Length: 141
Picture 1 (cartoon, rainbow, N blue to C red):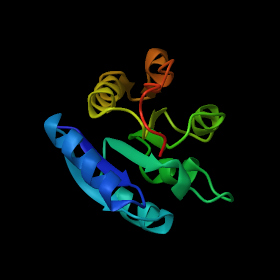
Picture 2: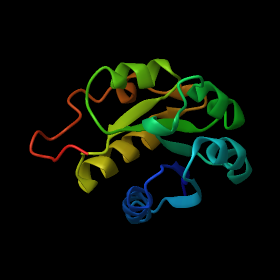
Picture 3: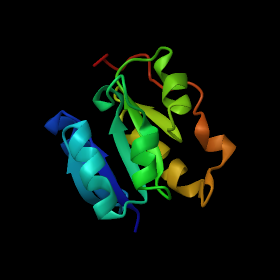
Picture 4: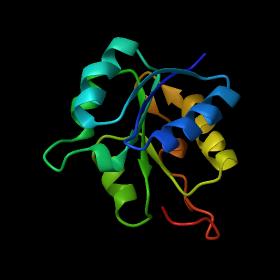
């Protein structure tokens, strides 16, 4: 069972993600609502995957700090808007990213792809970029 740590400031987002993860038979092993808590708690849960809201990451920080605490975990960044953030998320140390505007089904597909493509050295190249990320009919968050 894949062990997942969630870091998002919005309780409703964490709740929705928790439901998707449980439907995928993934285990939520910890949650954080802010960056300091994510850094402090993630390593203690020994996650296979970290789901992190882009807006939690301070401008003076990077995912490299979080990745250093959980070096074997796949890092997925949650973004609210599609723009240059996708490339920034990848260059900041994420393995991939997921738009918060995605349907639960698409989120599930992307999470399964990330877990399925994970290797000890990271994810396979085909998992790193998902192409078109968002259903145009989905509301912006």
